[in-house]
Length: 217
Image (cartoon, rainbow, N blue to C red; front, side, top):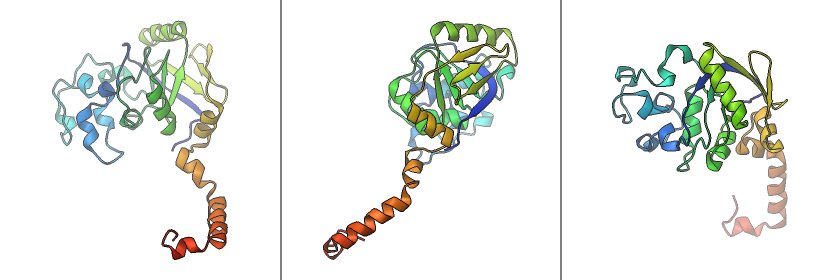
């Protein structure tokens, strides 16, 4: 998992509430058994004018010119500004995968659905919760100033605007440390590999019949 420390990026505003995971990555794309290739189908129903299916050549599909991520001024955006209850709906880890694979490192919103919020941390995507007033202000500034960029400092737990204004956010300490270290749950477990091997060796020495019974290695 890629570590998150300080990130500066172009901001794209998705001005709608209750964006569900089926809108983030439609169900037909969940057939893949791989964890890659979802980026081009992020917000597929909004991004394209036709119906998308796995295996289609997205470069030949008609784009929706009214969709924010298709607009020239937001090309290369890595911070998504959203409204309340982002990521609601079904539990699919493909949603943060698609966002990350389309280049996003963080999402700023007043609130997130719990499962999406948890899945984001597990994959290195930072969900930042700010107040409604703060998010409203950021929406106004993003729309008013082309090339609008934010700095997100995870260590200091703050978002910094181009004018230098700071917006602070809360985060669980363990999740913060995991992102700063770039460790998901598997990575954190593997850091204890030596202790795990020692435990297994001691267990085998104490209970050798586990192997004899076919329950060990």
